[in-house]
Image (cartoon, rainbow, N blue to C red; front, side, top):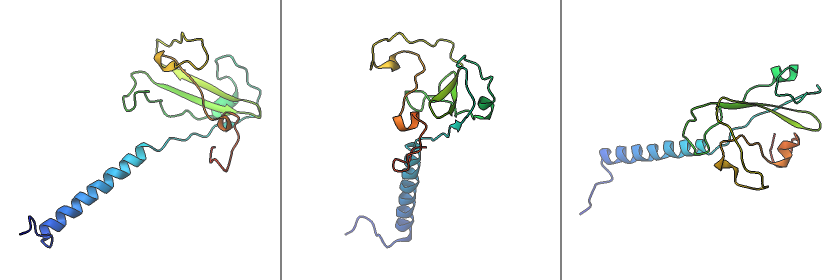
Length: 139
C-alpha cells in the first residue's frame, strides 16, 4: 500500500507548488551573490587632490550605491558612498563618509584592517589601472 497516491490532483498540485518555491528560492539566492558593478567616468581634466569636488569631472561622476556593512546584510547606521573617475595614469576616489568615528591604527603592510572602523580601497590591478580587459570582463 502506497503512503500517498501520486496520481491524485492534490498531490500533483502540492509537488508543483514545492518545486515552484524551490525554483524561486534558488533564483533569489543567485541574485544575492551577483556582485554590483560600477562604471567610473574617464577625465582629461587635471585633478587637485584636496578633498574637494571643485573640478567639473566630479559633477559628471555618479555616486555609488551606499556601502553595505562587512557583516553582510546588516544595514550600517551611517552611509558611505564614493565617486570614481580615472585618467590615463590614475583612478581617483572621492569618498563621502557620514560615520563620525573613522579611524585606522594599523601601520604594518597586509594587516587585517577590518578590525578598525576605517575606509579602505583595494581591487584587481586591471580595474585600478582603469583598463578594460575583455578576456576578464572587468570594466
